[in-house]
Length: 124
Picture 1 (cartoon, rainbow, N blue to C red):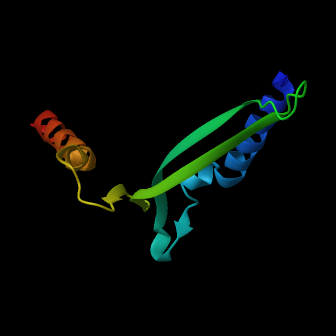
Picture 2 (cartoon, rainbow, N blue to C red):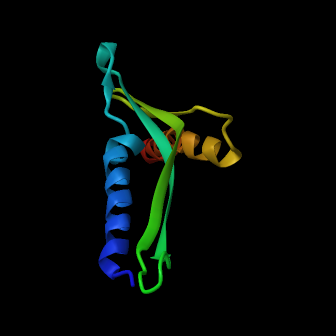
């Protein structure tokens, strides 16, 4: 009969392979320094799946060898770029922006306008 150790080894092997393929730089990439102090950071969406299984197989009378398998897969999809300079941060979506993306992207400009209106009213 199969022991837990054999199944654990299948899982450990598949998870080790996932660890080799995936790190934090896969999701939020390293900053790319450009001219005039501009930095660009790529951001991706990562989906992964994992499966493992096994069992005893009766090959001959009285023998029960273990057979099993495991697998894992990753899907990495670029989502946007963060463009930063000394003054602001701008989000540039790669695919068509949803209405919520546009709202989130316009929040810094809206906050600046609100602060300016408050400052103008306090001066008067």
